[in-house]
Every structure is written in C-alpha cells, then in structure tokens.
Amino acid sequence: MTTTSAPAKPRFSLVSILATPTVGPFIALVLASILFASQSDRFLSASNFSLIVQQVMVVGTLAIGQTLVILTAGIDLSNGMIMAFSQILMAKVFMDNAVPAPLAILLGFIAAMAFGAANGLLVTRLKLPPFIVTLGMFNIAFALTRIYTTTTIRMTDSPWHVFFGRTFTVGGDGGTKFTYGSVLMVLLFFIAWFVLRETAIGRRVYAIGDNPEATRLAGINTQRLLVGVYMVAGLFYGIAGLLLISRTGVADPQAGQNANLESITAVVLGGTSLFGGRGNILGTLLGALIVGIFRNGLTLMGVDSIYQWLITGVLVILAVAVDQVTQRRAK
Amino acid sequence: MSKPTPVLEARGLIKRYGHVTALDGADFEVMPGEIMAIIGDNGAGKSTLIKALSGALIPDEGEILVNGNPVVFHSPIDARHYGIETVYQDLAVAPALNIVENMFLGREIRRPGVLGSVFRMLDKKRMLTEATEYMSDLQFRIQSMQQAVETLSGGQRQGVAVARAAAFAEHVVIMDEPTAALGVKESGMVLDLIRKIRDRGLPIILISHNMPHVFELADRIHIQRLGRRIAVIHPKDYRMSEAVAIMTGARDVHEEDKQAI
Ligand SMILES: Nc1ncnc2c1ncn2[C@@H]1O[C@H](COP(=O)(O)OP(=O)(O)OP(=O)(O)O)[C@@H](O)[C@H]1O
Ligand SMILES: [Mg+2]
Image (cartoon, rainbow over all chains, first blue to last red):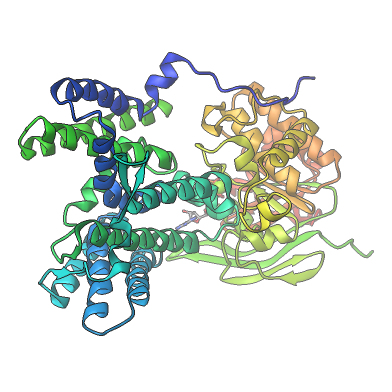
C-alpha cells in the first residue's frame, strides 16, 4: 500500500508564482525602476540605494512589529505613536533628569513594550477588536507625548542616541556610505525571519492567526502568546524610535503620525495577509523598500510629493485586492 | 461482581451557558479497549461532554476520574498529560500550516544540542519522519506531508486530525463526529482509521449521528438526552430504531435500557 514518502518538491508554475501576493508589487517595482532609471542617472547609483535603505529603516523596523501583529490576525494602528512616545521619553529623561543615555534608551524600549502589553491585554482579556484597541492607544500615546512635551529636542550631543545614524563606507575611498541603522534594520528582519520560520513560537504565531481555536485546543496558551506578540512588537517600535532620533538628530513630538498606515502598506505590499496566518516577514522588507523606492524615484523625477501619496494608496489597495482574491479562491 | 475501573469517567457534570444548561448532571464512562459511542439529538450536550473530558472547557460542577482517580483539567494540556487526545467536531486544524506542523502543533520537537536549547530551532526533519511514520502506521495515503492542510480534501483533513490524535494518545482517543460531512468513500477511510486505533488497544469515545456507523463500530452506546445520560445499551441487543426512539424521547426508558451501564 502506498503511504507517505519523501516530501514532494514544491512545484513552481507560472500560475503559482503570479498568485503569490508579493509578485504583483515586485513587477510594478521593476517597471517603475526602469522608468526612474531612464529619467534620472542618479537612481541606480549605490549611494542612492543606500539613501533609500536609510529612509526606510524607521518604517521598516515598525513594519516588523506590524507584521507580527498582522500574522496573528490583528492590526496595530498605535505603532507610530508608541514610537513617538518612546523616542521622546528616551530623549527627555536623558536631557531633563540626567539619566545616563543607555538607561534612558532602555526606558524608552520598556515604555514601548508596556504600551504593547496594554494593547495585548485589552485584546485578550476584554476580547476587544485589535482595530479599536490600537486606535484608542494611538490617541492615548499621542496625547501622552504632547502632554510630556511639545518642543523638539536636539539630540546630536548624545553619541548613544545618534549612534545608528553614523555611517561606514563600503568599497574604500569614495565608496558608498551606509548607516549602522540600516544594518540594524536588516539584521532585525533576519532575526524575526529566523524566529518565525525555525522556532515553535514562530509557527504558533502563524497558527494563532490561522485558527485561534485550534491553537488553543492544541494546548497552547493563546492569550499569553498574543500579549507576548504585542509586547515584542512594542519593542520593535521602541527601536524604531531610537533609529528615528539617529536619523534626524532630534526627538520630535510630532513624529510618526502616518507611520501606522505606512507600516501596514509595507506589510501588505510584502504579501502578508490581513486575515492573519499567512505571510513572510522578508516580504515586508521588500514592501518597505518598494514604498521607499517609489518615493525616492518620484522625488528624483521632480514629481510633487502629493502624487507619491496617491501612488502609495493605489499600490496598497491593489495589494489588498490580490490578497482578498487569493484568499477567496483558497476557500 | 466487581466491575473493572473505567479508564475515563465523569460523574454529575453540570455546565451552564447563561440560561442554557448544556450538561445537567451527566455521567459517563469508557472501559479499557472498548469503543464507546455517544448518540443524542442536536444540542443534547455531546460536544460539551467531551469538551469537559478533554479539558477544552471546565465544568461548573461534577467530577472527572482517570483510572478511578479524580482529576481536574484546567486546559487541553492537562488532558493531554493523561494521554487523552481529541478530534473536535470542527476539526481544529490550522489550514495554512502543513500536515507536519499541524500534527506537532503545541508539542514541537526541538533540535538536539545548542541549536535546540539556545536557538530554539525546530527539528523539522525528525518531525517529518515521525509524522510520516504515524500516517503510514494507519496506512493513510497522502501525497506530501509538507502540503498545507487547506489543500487536502475533507476526508484527508479528517484523516490528519484522527492520525494526530491516534499518534499521541496513550490512554483514550475522543472523536466528535469524525465522519460528519464526508462522502461514502471518505467516511470509509476514516472508519478504517478508527478500527486500526481500536486494534492497537486504545479505548475510543465516538460521537456520531450516523446510526449504521455507530452500530457497526461500537461495543456500547451511551445515549445522551437533555444534558444527561439516560441509557447505555449494547448494540447487539437493540435495533437502530429503538435506540433512536430512546434518544429522541419517543420511547420511555426502561430499567433494562440501563443494564449496560
Ligand atoms: N459556547 C456556548 N455558548 C452558549 N451555548 C452553548 C455553547 N456551547 C454549547 N452551547 C449550548 O449547549 C447545548 C449543548 O450543545 P452541544 O454542542 O454540546 O450539543 P451536541 O449534542 O454536541 O449537538 P450537535 O449534535 O448539534 O453537535 C446547546 O443548546 C448549545 O446551544
Ligand atoms: Mg456536537
């Protein structure tokens, strides 16, 4: 009797490739890149690529946390404001209270994780929809940030706070400069990728978004796992706050107001399903780069920034539409 | 005559959902090596009963005993510790995960050495090998163990859920309507799996609305009505129509209907 044997090799047909949610945006990216390259000599230069990565490092890091939450079939609208509060805290306690810089940064991370824990506890204990909880938390974190300070704080005198904005050169003299922050972001993506793919916790994050009841019945403490996910996401938002200070040299209470939608855009363009349980974190990195490249290319072409918003909006809706259609077909 | 100790027993279970009393003092028992079927109308509290027995819910009152010893299940993990595995009515699989991942969800195997202890890496190879063995033990055919469960037919999915329970159960396997919504051929496949589990000596609790299946497989039949056990019968002593009549309340319950208790 035939039974199970060696794993069958996955088949790569044209259909299955086109049905992969990341492929559409990727094709759009290639086409747009050809256009940008034909319009601007600078577009394909290494230094421009380095600039793009630097520009996406904050949103990219936020999008790691966002991906984790979305994989559990949640959504996090509060991430930009958690980042804003975290960076203000790590700047203020250093400036006003003479807390040593590393400790100040750590406090910022802890605050971000506390916001995440609050999100997670509200979602699991009170069974409130993540959309509402994090929308509320968006407002709370926004208000707390503004109550704390309304002025921008210059941080260039604290080497710790701006370390990740420093650059190193690849390719000898006259080579390309990369920031340490860009490297950190890519590293964080790979860590998240590893954990999601190779560890039990990672697979359970997928399972919980896929079928929460089955995950609970499999003996997994789903409430604890969810709170953990929101907390770890908070940590990523805190790190994004530090990267933001590094990049801009200031802690700005106005920061991050659109970051929730930008990070969701990166996640969705990267092919992660808003229904949860499906997706790949490296797709999110690609998604973040896609947004960055579009913005950058359009800027180089001298297109008004309002059109960048327009195009980003179209891209997101297209990506979500592809997700909807593939999900429906799967059922 | 002293009765052997039931491997799993419930006494006087009560479970209320608001105004609905799903279990109203339900008793239950299953003996070593037997297939105990549970029949009852929709809403009789069959699923609620087995959820209490598998730790998926905590009864408001009543007692659960394993080998005669009282136990308290706070979660499905507790029941699993006693070797009780369950196939739930709605299957409880994660469709986007593959077969191996589903089988090992919640009891993943880590790599040996530092990779497992420090880096927490899964031993995917070992899980694949073991899952493949379980499936071939049950002579269950499938193309690839690494395909997502959502790509499987209804019968195959059911087979995965049954195989998972069979693989890890050391004490009792509980199945809630494992053939509901399956075609004739697919039902046959699942029934074969159930027989193979029985042949290994594991007691089975089987909930089904399908009387021919019940009468074919069961050693005893527990009849549940309005949240209570009203009778336990041997299938050889009764016709299907009689069992259904007891189940629906069309026929009064006599003393002899309880003789198999
Ligand atoms: N989570 C719940 N919340 C509220 N009421 C519930 C819940 N689960 C079950 N009930 C109620 O408890 C009663 C028993 O339900 P249960 O699912 O145990 O019946 P069943 O015998 O398995 O029925 P079926 O044959 O339809 O599967 C029903 O009246 C049902 O509506
Ligand atoms: Mg039921």
